[in-house]
Length: 398
Image (cartoon, rainbow, N blue to C red; front, side, top):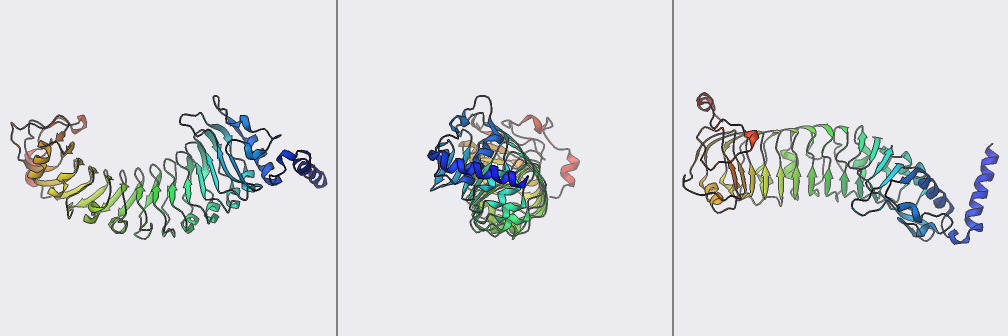
């Protein structure tokens, strides 16, 4: 039986290299790997991606196949145009035979099954992206052997299990995107890459503390929202002083929010629905366009340094005192678009009852220790009770 298989392999390779001279330039192992990949994948109705994959011609002319010398160096499967119907099937383990491959992508579609363990054989791989499909199973630890990997994007799939600790050793990793899966466990610590800029793990089931040394200071985009992380993060955030986007919402983080964070070049700061506590004290005027600190345990007075925020959500906390006059000025001139301060313990908002708040601005002050101004416009979820019970206001000490 073994002898028969050897004869078949010999004849196949002979046919590839001699009988069809038009494809003789392609490495025979790459040719066979492409054949296996083609058999495992199919066009979804409406897709015509594989119409050029005619193995009687040069595979380097196939759509999505890029060659250098006699090797496949990039494989981009599926029509990349927005709204294209994509592919169905599974990723054949034979793709691990493409030894010179540096880039492997699959457009959004209906690819199912596991990521083949043979991915560990692609030692030259720099870019691996299979997003918005239906991959399942665990992330192969062998990905940690791909020392040249720059981008790992497995977002919007159905992957389970934990994040392999082997991935922290990828010293050239730049983009680490695993959002919208079903991953569990903790985030491995001490990523060795000094080029890591984007970390997106949003909407998984990840848990545990995040130590200050978990991520390098090079991270600029950090999205951990909709997980079950816990513990303080002030040490981590103080270190990540290059952040331009931060979403830690819908977790169980505790402790204080470091004042330095408000000076970072961030456009959107989303820390809502956690258990952060203590005062919020920016050291200078905040230039972030949207700041959402709602549904925490923050206390103290509202800082006037926040009055320069375009959309500010401080609702459902424990803020006390009077709203600084700077907010009134910003509302009057239309600088503030959204100011949600409902469900706190605020005692004053010095605005002239005849003053007009622009229609483009939305301000809500319901359920505080004062009567909200007539101009207050609130979302339905704020409820209908205008002020807190007197007993709550007299007992609350911030």
